[in-house]
Image (cartoon, rainbow, N blue to C red; front, side):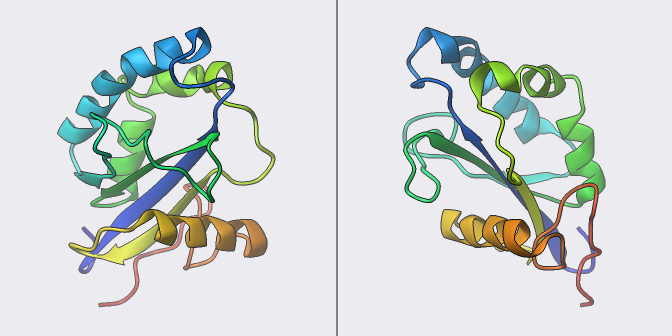
Length: 152
């Protein structure tokens, strides 16, 4: 945590096929393991979970049934980066084009939230829209173009 703030992130993907299809089988089969690794990762605080099970595949983004969303909160960018590029998640990242279409617009946004605050899907939609329309700013940024936490 940085000065009373935690790092929120949203990541969306446009599925190539329905979740129960053979195309998405490896993704769905590995989801519980990847989520468990996140839950156990140093610096992990929270992640969006639906009532369907281990992940958040029941949520839709911008009302689009082909977009799925991943949201989480971390103590800071270092912890988040370690998980994303770590051994449990990296293989998923490397195979993302098998399961998800390549989108030209930003699919990941980061922003700071007061410690203990949990963002909603609507919050994430707003942040990703801001990033797409205005580029990186303190309101929504990327790992490459990060902004520091607000002053306490």
